[in-house]
Length: 589
Image (cartoon, rainbow, N blue to C red; front, side, top):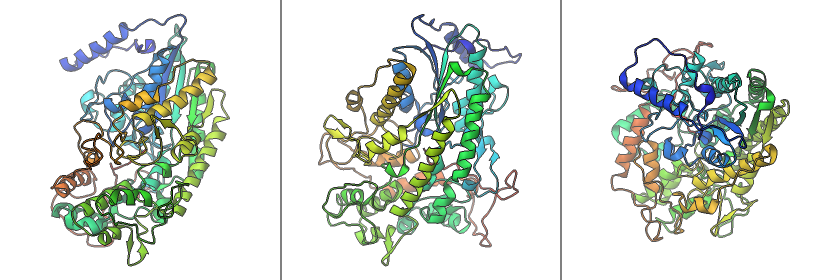
C-alpha cells in the first residue's frame, strides 16, 4: 500500500522526545519517504471510512490486527490495490489492545460502538438518561503521546489530532484527511469515503446490553445467582438496587429508551452530510462518498429463536422444549419459512441457560429465564412485536439516509441493508461449498462467535457487494474475492455439522474469553461437542466481575446498600445538570 504524499510535511516540534518515541517517528518518516510512486495508468485513491465496529473490524467482541485484516474494508483495499494505488492505513492493535505503529496516520476511522452522534463527539441524551446531547471527551482523540492511548477513540484516530492541532472526532479526522489531500498540489488522488454510521442507533435496543443510567444486561440473574461468586452476586445486587444496573432490557420502555428518535437521527444525519459536502477543501469532483444503509439487527445470530434454543439445549436434555408463552419461529417439526417470526432471546441469556442445564439444573428451572408461573419474562424475551418496532425504526433511518444522500453532488447511497437482510433471511440464498449462508449463530457461516459481527466469510460478502457498486459507478474493475476460498480459512464455519465452530486459536480475555467457551474442540468430529470446564461458573464470575468493575459507579471497596430508592450518582451532566453514570459496556455494532 502506498503511504500519503500529503502527510509528509510534518512540522518539527521543538520538544525533547524520548528515544523510543523518536525511533518510532523515524520509522514513520522512513515509510513515508520510501513510498512507491503512482503508476501513471493507475489512479491514486484515498480510501477512508467512518463508522462503527463493522468498519473497525470487531469480531468476538475484540479488536486486533488479526480481525482487522479479515474485515470488509481491508478486503476492499486489497482489491483496489489491483487497479489503483490506494492510500490506505489502518490503526492496528495487538491482542492486548495496544496500538501498533501509532505514528502511522489512519484512514480507517471506524470505532467500535459509534453511533450517528458519537462520530461527531456527541453523547446522545436518551441512552445516558440525560436531558440534552453534549460533546463528550470520551468520543474524541485528545492524547499527545502514544503511552496515553487508552480509550478506543485515541487508539483509532491518533495522530490525526496532532495534525489538526486539537482534539478530533471521527468527522473531524476525516476532514483533516480530505483537507490535506486538497493541499497536496501535485496530487490528483480521488477520495473514496465509505460512510456506514447509524447501526448503533438501534443496536442497544436489539441486543439488550449497554447504555448508562442504568446499564442494561440481558442476564437471568435470579436463575444464575446461586452459581456466581459471593462478591459478584453482591455487586450485581447492589447495582440493581441502586439503579445502576437493569436486567430487563426487553421491556418496551427499555427498548424505546435505547432507540434513537427518528427525528433526532434525521436532523443529525442531514447535518453530518452537510459537513461532508461543505466543510472540506477537497472539491466535489475529487471525492465520492458512499452512504451505506443499515441492516436489521433482528436478523443477527446473537438473537436466538425457538428453533435455535431447542437445537442446542437438546444436546444436553433431549426432551427440552421452549415454554408455551415463547412464540415459535415455526411449528414443532416444521421447517422455518420466515426467520423474522417468533420471539428471541440474547446470546447471553442462551449461554447462561446452556450452562445451567449443563451443570445439572432441570429444564423447568432453566426455562424460568423465559417464563415464570405461566407468564412470559418480558424483560429477557424480545417479542416478535418488539422486533418489528425496532425494524420499523431502522427502516425509518434508511429512508432518511436515502433522502439525505440525494442532496449532495458527491454523495450517493449504497443499499447494503437490503442485500444483507435478504441473504440472512434466505430470500436471496447464497450457497458456498454446499452451505447456504444464514442468520443462524454458529450454523449459518455468516457471523463470528459474538453473533453480532460478521466472520471472515460475512465480511468478504460485504466487501464484494461494495466492490460491485464501486466498479459500476466509478468505472473501476477491482476483482471480487473468492468467497469459497475465504470460507476454507474461516474459523467461524461449522465443517462437521454439529452446530459449533472452532473459532480463532488466539489468546483471549474478558467477554471474548466467555464466548470462546463455546467453540468446537474438534471440528472434524460431530460427536465431539462443546466441553465446558468443570469450573465454568468460577470463570464466568471472574470475567463478569472484571467487567462490572469497569462501570465507574459500581463500588470497588466494601459494599453498602443505598439508603434510599434513588440511584447513586457520580456527578452532573455537563449541560443539563442531571446526574450521569458513564458505562464502558457498550455492545455494538
